[in-house]
Image 1 (spheres, rainbow, N blue to C red):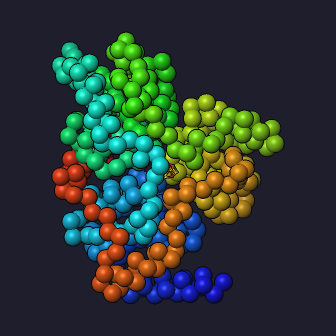
Image 2: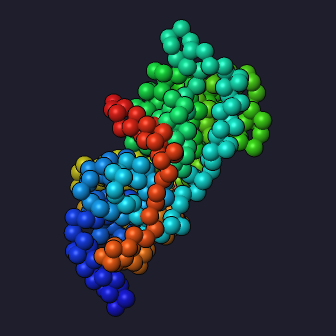
Image 3: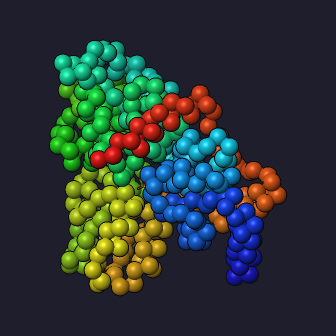
Length: 359
Ligand code: 13P
Ligand code: SF4
């Protein structure tokens, strides 16, 4: 349409004028109308790295959600401005853990466990936050011997944590925590769920003493929709189908799938498959549809037939992208995400631990 092509001209013109002064990053869940303008598209981990690899850019325009832009700001040089085209692009899962509730949980747990290391020098508990969390929670981890993980390195990070601690407090996503720890051999009975509205998280002292991973009760409303019944139906209708899901899906779904991994894992699994493969994918619809379009030689469909995008990722409309880019051309920085130093410094410690914790 005319409006679409006008926006397209405006975005391209602004990007051309800005040149190397600006880098546009896009998460895999962004809509195609936005992804086409991204200089780099990736999963959360890759985007955190990408923010660091363009130190020459004056501005980083982050087409993703708020916690990702915060992370980019923490890792970028202080002179660089990180811009979130729509400030209302949050993440409902990240909002499920707030600093006050985590501090309260930590106070209760450290009172229960004490602070003495065991014979191997491991402290009683280590906090691990999923990348999908506010910057102050990453700061909390930095201040308390903890670390950040993404869905692509959760097992490596949990190993890092178990080398240093007897237990882990994992927030906000219970599913990523449970799926990852279970695959590492941690029994599900030793992963109680912490309910922040109840004393001792609603758990008995015994279960917390026995615990190896204490899971926050957060979840992603997009990935919670996937079910084992959908997988059964996909297998019945498409014999030979490979079912791949994101580890934010509930445990029975991950167990019933053929593979689970980050958005980049899903992209790579499809890219590596022989022509004529069939995939049923359990993740956000914009990514699944893009893959289906990019690989017409395969049959690719979403496990859930009710179209369910991540509504906050979708809030990055190309109109906002045009607006922030044209403002940059005029020398005006709009929608800047700026994490205060008191939070950014400890958060950077936790993020750098993650970036260093290679498998
Ligand atoms: P990835 O780290 O796999 O990109 O996931 C981010 C996310 O928000 C998934 O819902
Ligand atoms: Fe957050 Fe879920 Fe959207 Fe990912 S898909 S950004 S976890 S709400």
